[in-house]
Image 1 (cartoon, rainbow, N blue to C red):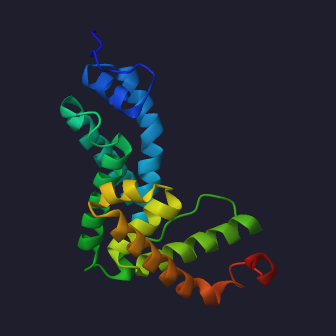
Image 2: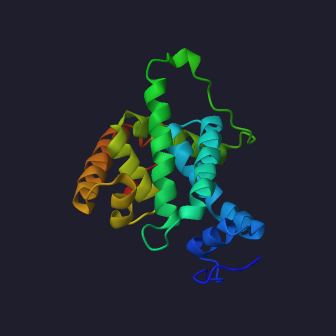
Length: 197
């Protein structure tokens, strides 16, 4: 196997994708191990459903593999491109879901034993997920990418194909809406006023 001249063997996402495009299965495994958990977590946060998130994550990775031979390093980061694809797949699923009644959507199953801390963590996660679900799609996407996934505003702007200023506006409105929605639940979620600081 000949290594492409511009493939950097240091292990950057771009380099691994180029190596995969030239037949390197080890590069594909390394890139999958690095990116698949992040893509799955992002999809799960946007969809609120583990099984659908798995489907979306697999589809997003398949699209990355199909794109690999035409990938042009430097045009976009692999993670930015992958987050955009994942978000678009999630939005498609959310739009299809709109006509489905709540009784038809399966409740997520928690395989963990029910110790007090896990129950509290789960309550907090569910409260956040429920609050996120009430936000408009673009606000939810911006808030998740910024405050949960930890992307910068310029990276989010690339993912969402909007300006960094629009990202700031979306995240600010989303944070205010979440704060208002969750303000009355501090006590039942286990946050006391001393820790509120």
